[in-house]
Image (cartoon, rainbow, N blue to C red):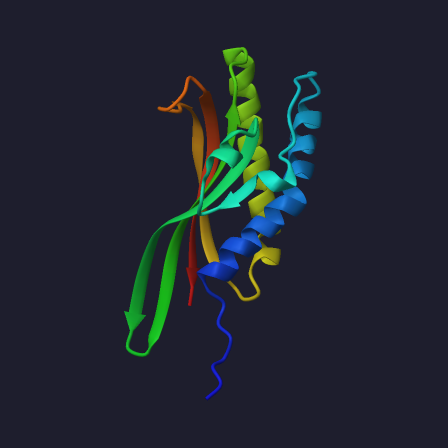
Length: 162
């Protein structure tokens, strides 16, 4: 018996990663250029996008993008079911730079991330995926196993696939 191919969480996560790899740095450049104040930025290397698994090799990058599904809810009505996924997408920057300028950088990375997802959503799914996007403001973290500090900014995507 042949099973009809169904678009699922695996497809969604890796389509999102592929889209971010292809477009996020372009949006980062555009946001920094729009401000035209000379503030420098780093692009995210293609090898520094990671989904669902964070390891030391990735954390050694000065900047990386982490994508994780943190919650799954199933809504069913008889034989019909829809799943809603909470997906967190973070841009993580390490290092100790001037705090005020770092806040500006992180806000710009956050805007670029939002723009990339909002404007590119139609290319992410092969079928309609309804979504809402919530911003995660910049925050500071320190690696408990070292003196390395991190600053993060991101979005939370609630995506429903019927």
